Structures are given as C-alpha cells and as structure tokens.
Image 1: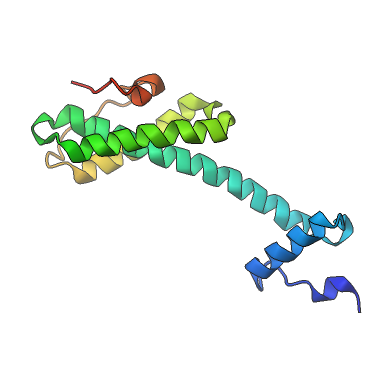
Image 2 (image 1 turned 90 degrees about the vertical axis):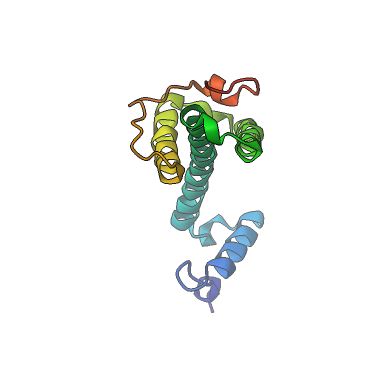
Length: 148
C-alpha cells in the first residue's frame, strides 16, 4: 500500500499528523508532506507570537492606565504586574524582532485591549480614556516610568 494512505489526516488526529509530517520533513520526503496544512500551522504560529506580544502589552497598558487614573489604589500587586510585563515584552521582542514592524498599529491594538481590561477592573467605570495610547512603547518598557 501507498505510504500516503497511512498518514493521519490533519482533521483526524492533529498530534499524530504533526509528528508524522515532522518526520517526513526530516527524511526530506517532500512529496509526502501535507504542505498546505503545514503552511497554515506556521502562519498560525506567527499570529500566536504577535497575539502573545499584544496581550502582554495590553496588560501592561491596562495597569499603567489604572496607575494613572486610580492613584489611591496603587499597590505592590500592580507594580509586580507592570514589572513582569516589562520583563516579558523585551524577551518576546528579542526572540522575534519583527514584532516591532508596524509597532504603531500593534500599540493601537494593545491599547484598545488595555482600555477594555482597565475599564472592566476599575471602580470608576465612567472614566474616559484618551482615544489614542498616551504612552509610547519606550515609556511602556521604561522601568523608571510610571504615569502620574
């Protein structure tokens, strides 16, 4: 029987499919691999990296907003979250420097998410945040920066 008939399909068993296709790639059996799904998975991994970056940046922005708009609630928990995000984001940028491409658009996306997070967590929900992010990426990542 043809080896292709024994391959698990992407839809049937993703894990088995991934292992088998990785094995076929290592053996350079390019005519047997599932090129289309492999390409989709690689693109998905890239989107996942960008989403992870945006998520960390959104949490950081949310806490900077809370720090700025609720000074009476500032505490070590917020500082720890800010510091952790400031640790994670540069690591992500080091691993994938191209995440900096279109950084203005990425910052806009992160800001919208950050506003949503901050609004949901803040006591004063009536606060109107600026339409655009009041912090630059450099400020967000600056360990000495905390908004007034």
